[in-house]
Length: 498
Ligand code: GAP
Image (cartoon, rainbow, N blue to C red; front, side, top):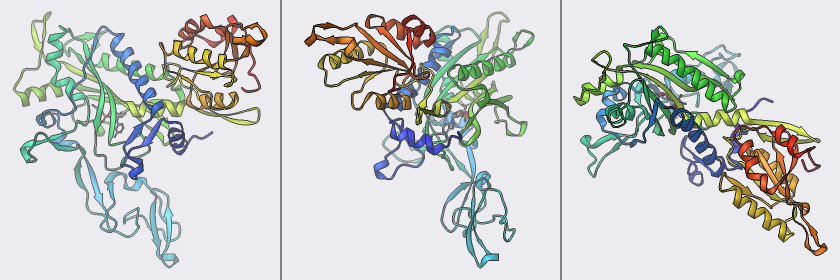
């Protein structure tokens, strides 16, 4: 199966993951809203990242800084001067393109060899009829393109009631700078010793010229960034500390994506060539993922040296150093920066999880999310919605499990349809309440107080006592194996309903 972005866009809309922003007004360019399931998935990604990289580590702390910062932050960081893309405009249709992306798109051509008939020519190729290469606008095929001009990607706004030049500020284009400007506050308030890191997850804004590909490149997005400060005068295992920690963070980030389900075959590292390194970087690697659009950046891990702290010291007039007690000297720490995009991580997890398979002659769409990522952990389904006792018991189970996880109740279709719906949104387990569970009071029959748990991936079922539900899910949702549960409670092959 070759997965397309259109399949993911359509599933995302149909099942409440992602909607186009302001859709009833025709949509806002490259801005997306997360729906009821999307917000759960996104929060799970951020929560796991925070748990694994902040909560679990004694060398990490977090902050949550304001989006609006002092405008001088962006002068010091180089964003006012250098955060630009070269842009060209079509003089005819006024479409705007990134100069370095124009030839990466198919182009319209009115071919002189066929009396001016219109053809769409694949990206980068010449017209097979007349041999011409693209020189005009790729979209309308008629207009000349302007020469390239630099376009700053920061969104400008005004702080306070007066809209003049003195009030100009920017929506942050990255979360990173707040960690640098708070370096001293954090280090002193928490009495931190090098090496230590500051993490932050939050919104960033970039007025991208050619955004697109769903949530891959958008104008408003979320980042999860870490600035890890190391002493450049130290060595670790015989290597300069910054180089050691850079490699360590690359390995840790790769392992994190693998742990939550991205496969080895779809992940790779790409080292930046010297001529593409950012002005502040000694060395940068991207973790790339094989998205439906091809191999593209999932996150970057840069060695930013002491560039940022020195720049902010210069522009603010404050000394941003660390006193090394051992060497009795002030040092400007080097910074290793693992910078990930939440939306891109979500897209990668969604693409990796998506599978179509045939079950008893019918197509089954299933999102095989890692249980800790799945937006809904358990769906509770009554087998007969007309039996009051069954419905009451199912609601009670949902209420009990909801103390621990996101759990839904659904009785709006037959059981087979309900299972398929949960498969399609990646719910790892369903609980089915039936007559056997509750018994039949009219006939004086006692129920067995057991329910059927159905495993999404194998579609196997096991009959589990109600009192065991919480511990069983506690185990299954934190790395426990279905086979162990099935072994303990007796697995049944998937029922006809699947
Ligand atoms: N502080 C460094 C920094 O911001 P970056 O490579 O520009 O580095 C880091 O951004 C990550 O943020 C990217 O790897 C990507 O995952 C995400 N990102 C950047 N621009 C984005 C956009 N326009 N839309 C969605 N995600 C974006």
